[in-house]
Length: 308
Ligand code: PMP
Image 1 (tube, rainbow, N blue to C red):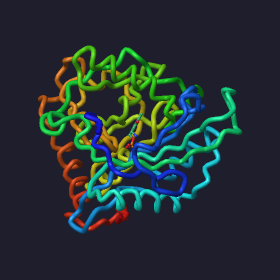
Image 2 (tube, helix red, strand yellow):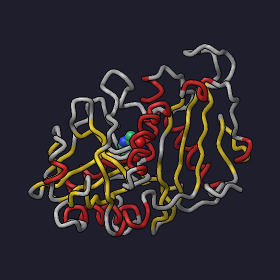
Image 3 (cartoon, protein in one colour):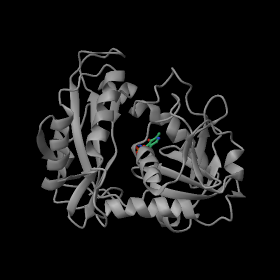
Image 4 (cartoon, rainbow, N blue to C red):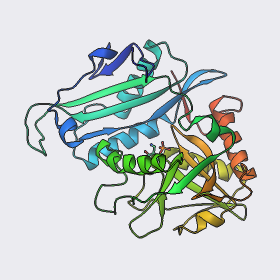
């Protein structure tokens, strides 16, 4: 048993459940050599009406899009993968967990862009709590602007959630941690706010939400979309527009969104306090609207929950 991950019993591989420890790939598979692997990160919540997976078809649709961008022939439909995710959570006996489907180019031919190697599809799931820690949840995060930029449009395609892209994300995160920050906000090559290492970024300015457009440098986050829809429910205006770096220093509120991260307030950027340094009212109301849905406290009016 690893000290780092709470291992679950089973992993879904190409249509059947196998023991966790048997989900291995060869060192010379294209995915290991060249990062040819696309994936998703999804959460299953324990709601008042039983366990339910949040925005499952939307995540699996994005997985299909990542495959299409990288010319990976995925043998399973969104509906097949919905079943695979449900069965993986159920058969592992988990109530709340993080689900990580992965589709990768396997072993055989050694060419860099091999299309003959088998495509391996996995659905893994494990129990995973608060990604950015209790402090993030309770008081907000101290973050920096990364010294690493996000890739330019038409380099690593931003809409694809591909493992290789996460080398850039690792540089962003490692840079932040080395400087004593919890996370970072990375800029696009033109110096505008792009996203975190694994999060989209929102600012609150004069009561309205402002977020960067999806512009080829950032991921089209599903939690980002969730927040935009919850803001509409709450009558909060949302403006998608380029964000200059310095807006981070003068915004009333800032927060991250992401599946692992959920909705987490940012209380300082580069040691400059955001607003009064406390979790602001707009962040709080969106956070609680989100909590109401994922706990099943309010009806699932957007049909975002798939029961297991
Ligand atoms: N950007 C990046 C680079 C990410 O890895 C993630 C996490 N998937 C996000 C944004 C947020 O996306 P989502 O809300 O769909 O999890």
